[in-house]
Length: 77
Image 1 (cartoon, rainbow, N blue to C red):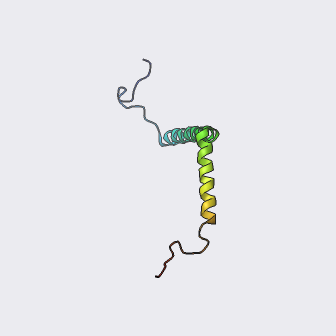
Image 2 (cartoon, rainbow, N blue to C red):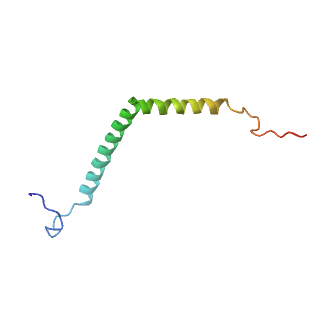
Image 3 (spheres, helix red, strand yellow):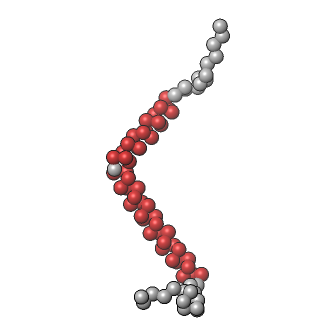
C-alpha cells in the first residue's frame, strides 16, 4: 500500500531522460541475461539436443546435395 502510481500523485515526479535511459538499459540487460539463461537451459534439454542434431543433419544434407547438377533433369522419349 505504500506504492503510489504517478497518476495519483498528480504526475509531479517525472523521470528525466537520463533516468529513463538508465532504466531502459538496465531492463535490456536483465532481459538479455534471462534470454541467455533460457537458451542455455534449452541447449541442455532433450528438445534442444534434438533441434541441434536436426540442424546439423540439414546442413550436412545441404552441403552434399546436387553439387552443381540441376535439380530437375529433363528426359526425352
